[in-house]
Image (cartoon, rainbow, N blue to C red):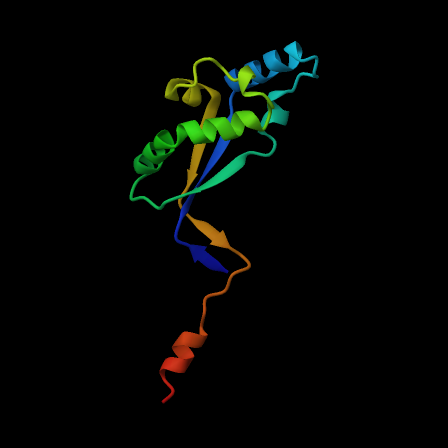
Length: 121
């Protein structure tokens, strides 16, 4: 197990996003989704470590356009169906963000060989 020097952000759709997804689905003749279905497998983005949660959220704010496009593309194939207003305000209305400041890789192990070899001459 190895602690990774990074943080993570979970992005979960809100009711507002569900309403948009279902409006597009109805227009395209697709079945509507529930909020539970939409939130079942949220995307987790690795983000730089920060000193405070506010700094992490500011980073998400800087990257909101990329995140929003990726998230909307996972439900709707055509960018023509994206909301007209792709502002940061729309991002915060469409998504909840949860910051995780401790990320652990259960498969990685620290390299202990370096410490053992140092003492040998």
